[in-house]
Length: 509
Ligand SMILES: Nc1ncnc2c1ncn2[C@@H]1O[C@H](COP(=O)(O)OP(=O)(O)OP(=O)(O)O)[C@@H](O)[C@H]1O
Ligand SMILES: [Mg+2]
Image (cartoon, rainbow, N blue to C red; front, side, top):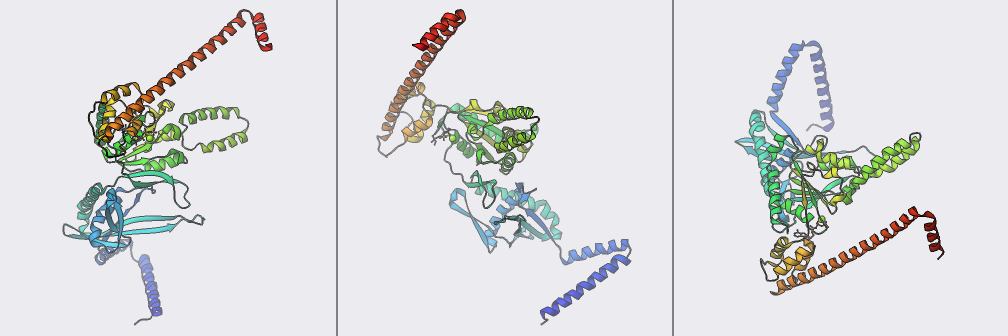
């Protein structure tokens, strides 16, 4: 057996010989002959190694967007690898019940298509970032590689790859466990926010939503038209997205409506917490990372951002800057303070209908608020928020849905009284529902709940009446006070000297 040292010295001399021959070849052979030889050389190498490799990276562009092809291949291979690969990774999907197996890194599996044999492998490379840190962030690149014989090039690039993508998407639709994403702080030393997800398992549907039936039908129709509207949106040249504004008092079912929408369309939900987003750039990054078929929700938009305030602040800033004309240092320190302004209204608007909003498609953006009047009109104008839905107090129609859901009854002698009370009293569906919650499986329990509800409604009515009376009494008192002040002012205008004497006397007394 050849020794290791001998092997290296032989290899070294062979390399030197090859380099020497190559240098002579470049110098003394005419260029045409060189091309000719290269062409044949390539043919010879193809003959010796006739395989082609295609790489499918996880991200497209500058790590901006996850590649759809990668996800489809992942699903396609998960099906193949459970039978083929020796090392597998497991993931829980679909109602957290079933396991999906996929091939582990550096594992290779064989596939066959119309008698053609090909090989898939899963790979990853890790490069450490150069920044100095105690926890250097590793930059991981994941990709799949497909290897096949040169002679099958047409079959593979033509039919096989589209077959893989189609199958992968079908498997994804089948296994789809919908997700609820939220933006939290990144792990390790990364301070920027990223999406983290859990399984989305909210049970709300349009059938359990207590709301006017006509309104629900209209919303469902709107959602269906949107989700089938790919061609239509392309035809009219609009990004494939739709904005919903849900407004109404607390406990009227705005968040429940979002869950019902997601369940109806089978979409993921991205719960975007604006207060944790540092700036507009981060907002844009987060929004671009959202996937198709998703609902992006910004709850309580009026509390998340001082939207109108930001605008006013800008106007003020302009004014300040003008006033500070000769004091650049003062202006700079004020700018420093303003750096905390985080996400701005214009940043948000830019994303809603700016050029970036067209990335992806099939997205619904929902804003919820308790105070629609506080919102900047620019934010909720039609076209941005296409549909404004008012969620309001529980009336008889909505009550019937709750009674059916909570007590499983369609009618009851007490319904009439409840109907009348609901027309006169503003009670939220959340409060009505609270009264209808069964606490035991006693047969009489349903009726007890209805009676409790009647009591609660009467109490709320009494309270509302008292509040209204107090309010009117306060208004009356304010009016009287104003009238008194007005009389004094009139007296001063008519006879200033004696009015002053009266006032002075009042003070002395
Ligand atoms: N229209 C409704 N239909 C069915 N259930 C409702 C409805 N409105 C409220 N509820 C019940 O009340 C609870 C609170 O409702 P939800 O969180 O959707 O209200 P909200 O309008 O989002 O309130 P907030 O403005 O405080 O966020 C829900 O868990 C749900 O059970
Ligand atoms: Mg809510």
